[in-house]
Image 1: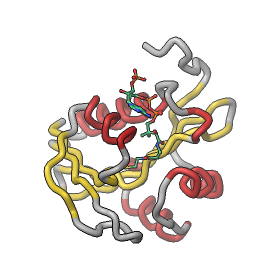
Image 2 (image 1 turned 180 degrees about the horizontal axis):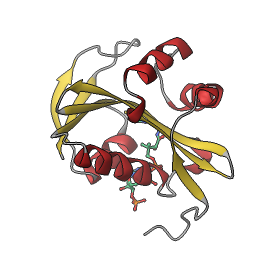
Image 3 (image 1 turned 90 degrees about the vertical axis):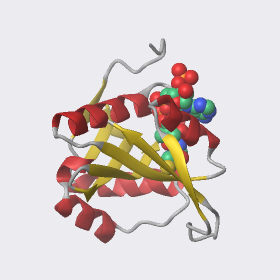
Length: 152
Ligand SMILES: CC(C)(COP(=O)(O)OP(=O)(O)OC[C@H]1O[C@@H](n2cnc3c(N)ncnc32)[C@H](O)[C@@H]1OP(=O)(O)O)[C@@H](O)C(=O)NCCC(=O)NCCS
């Protein structure tokens, strides 16, 4: 339990007019460049894979996932605004998505993370993700990724 957890935040479905805020958080938090058209294409493919965490109507975090196979979901983008980290918001979004995947019959979850992103690697390990492989020069800056995987 986080003593400083925001009690007033809610997890809700993504809406298309959330896009500017999502791109803003992504630009401060993620190293890859994402376009609105890519995000809308992903949304149209699987709206259930999108969720946002809002505090008083302002988005503080978001998660974008895709169906990798019929039984496996893949986390593609996940970020908490830098001013709201370590307050349990990421944990709430992750728990909510894992519960959704479990109810929906998914067997596993997969993601890629930069090999030097210790906060995120620690975060994922807390949820039972394990490193399964290293992908050389996976990112646009030629840095490596770990593939992480979890059985639901
Ligand atoms: C990774 C991220 C989403 C975690 O979100 P968060 O809301 O800050 O995480 P939480 O507060 O829910 O933390 C849950 C647990 O994760 C681990 N954790 C989170 N941040 C951590 C950090 N900076 N260092 C070490 N462990 C960390 C801890 O075990 C923590 O539990 P604790 O606070 O009880 O110790 C957030 O740091 C982030 O947005 N990072 C930048 C974007 C990014 O790297 N995304 C992942 C790309 S693959």
